[in-house]
Amino acid sequence: MNALQHPQQELRFTRAAQAVAFWLLAAVLAASSIILFACACYRGVHPELPHPMWALPPLIMAWLFAKLAMHMTRHAYLILTPLGLEVMPLFRPHSRMRVIYWQQIEAMEKDPVRPCLTLHFDADKTSGVHLSLRPIPKCKRELLIRALSERTAKK
Image (cartoon, rainbow, N blue to C red; front, side, top):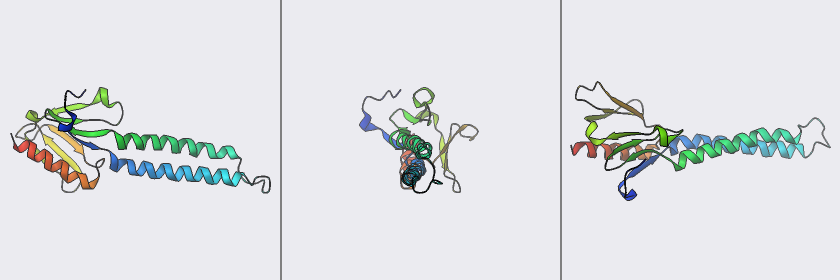
């Protein structure tokens, strides 16, 4: 649970980059469902066309993917607060979230090849946490890295 009393003092990063694929998949499945249903309307003329019920499975899958994409778009992945960095998993974030306090972070490095951020907890860089930056849109990644580097530089 977020112990912060003033939400305007936090910086949130959502999984919007991940959600794009699920929005597209939901749109394709919804369109295929509509096409299947439209084709089924001419079943009296062409009996080889599928039954209208065949439009139901892609419609249900489109609804599930749209619901998942909406969840990814609305809910936070990383939250920078005055206390520290809150990392929210995709499923059951309230029970499985992790708080990394600013005092724990000794160093930070971004992988130049992969979209990955490593937060080190000691000077020897033997313990820490790897955070994937793929869920965050590319245009927001530099903002996150800048905010984290300025916050860790204050130590």
